[in-house]
Amino acid sequence: MVISIAGVGYVGLSLAVLLAKKNKVIAVDILEEKVNKINQRLSPIQDAYLEKYLTEEKLDLNATLDAESAYKIADIIIIAVPTNYNMDLNYFDTSAIEKTLDIVNKVNSHALIVIKSTVPIGYTKNIAKKYSNLEIIFSPEFLRESKALYDNFYPSRIIIGKTANTKNYLSRASEFAKLLKDSALKKDVPIIFMNSTEAEAVKLFSNTFLALRIAYFNELDSYAEMQGLDTKAIIEGVSLDPRIGNFYNNPSFGYGGYCLPKDTMQLKANYKNIPEKLITAVTDSNITRKNFVANRIFLKLKNCKNKIVGIYRLTMKTNSDSFRQSAILDVINILKSKGVEIIIFEPLLNEKTYLDCKVISNFDEFTTLAELIIANRYDNCLNKIKNKVYTRDIFNRD
Image (tube, rainbow, N blue to C red):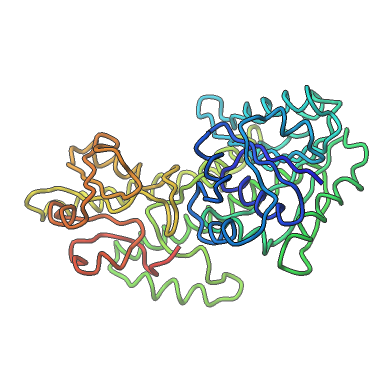
């Protein structure tokens, strides 16, 4: 079995590693640096589990820039390319998927095409009509950044969505589901077959519910902070209810990352001409939270002499190397609009400035210059200057 994977972000790369132990896998990307790292068994993304597996396991995995050659010999082609949200169109930018399909259509019309990229509800059904000679299915991913390979080894469920032109749907979809299940370490993984449109809805509604939980506990924290209450005590008391649970409940400056911001906006866009309040409220709540945090920081500056705010890390969450849609970026922009001087400590940055803010590479110099330090996620290295730190990371995790 030859499997080619388009895109080696955290979704594509984790799938490549997962499947390469029992199959020949060819990872395709447009960035030479990523391709070279994979071929050297180095991970281009931060994921400790993935890095360990890449170096220790015998994998039949190669990466290439040559998409045509990779797709031409494939039995299965998995599309895991980025689909960023276009604010002007209120729609995911699916052009990278179509570019991939154009190449596949040219060199290999017999492979099973599996779309793993997140797409608008109804997309796969429509694109299958355009590429009517290709067998296309949609299989949503439910992976966390920095824990993607682990989530592939221990999946919560496997969902396969068919389209009208998947002629041998049950046999071919079952074949792909079996590939994922056989490669997983978890036993008795639920497998659900449905239409592609319903499968797309599962993805967007799942992520929007997670965003709702984050927004809910952030608003709980806003209330507690304003009223001088113990956020941790309230959350612990609420979360001990088994119907609520102790997860996705650690306050932050707002939800961010690659998935939740764009998926909630896309679901909201899919509600056009359908009555709703809650989906819009989730996206609005996240904006409100970031403004609330920025205002709290601005008020604290009144008691500072030099009024220099230090931003400790831009990453969205602990053990992540991603700044994508990180809430702290919006907080920075709000503070800048108020004339606040900002310096940044971010080891992942090589630039001397970022967002027109000075980047300080030396931690001691950073903590000396900044009179107030902002941390979306707390780190033990801040303990010695804890009196300077403003964070809403109540449980020091996630």
